[in-house]
Amino acid sequence: MKQLMKRFGVPKPKTKSEGLSEFRNRGWVLVDATYEPVNALNKRDRDMVIERDYLQLCGDLKRLLAIRWSEGPLVLIKANVRKLLEPKLKRDGFNVLNKGRCVYFPASGQQLVFDRQFGEIVPPS
Image (cartoon, one colour):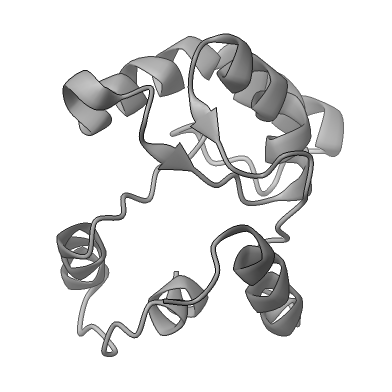
């Protein structure tokens, strides 16, 4: 989240909640593909959880994006999330901007790669 905040010029928030509110005030929403922690799972199990929770994700996106849900631009972050969900979201009418391009999660030294990849999809304003 810190790299996303930096990307959009959001001042360093004091709390996660404050940061998410500021992000929303700038017209963006950050949504996890699943609400179950998957970091400790192996790749196959992580992917199964993400696919299992797809319908809940769609419902959450439609609720958050309101009546214009099919127009709201989505950027999928993490290679496996993009691979698993981009075809399904596009099939179901969502506006996915990735167009097959990965955006790596901005951690573990991937911050600069994230910034470049995200910038290819959403140019800096």
